[in-house]
Image 1 (cartoon, helix red, strand yellow):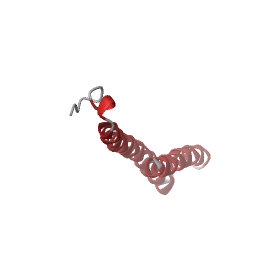
Image 2 (image 1 turned 180 degrees about the vertical axis):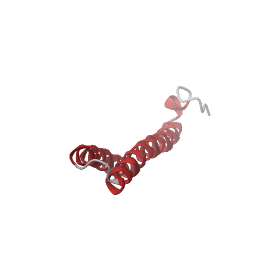
Image 3 (image 1 turned 60 degrees about the vertical axis):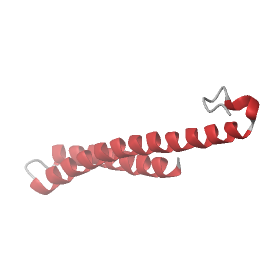
Image 4 (image 1 turned 45 degrees about the vertical axis):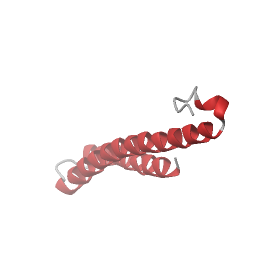
Length: 85
């Protein structure tokens, strides 16, 4: 979960910085550098949000597999986990 949290925090920073670039674009109109930076940070932030979601899904599957393996160690619980002995 720490990887997903880190990626999510970077995404949040990029999305907040895109808002700052939008404000700068209003204050300094017709500046291509500000517009490009705003677009890049917004797209980068959204891409990182999607990546963080995939990391959460992958880590959740790994944790579920570990829990199922632990339950299979106890014979009485193995049937409920789908891995009857």
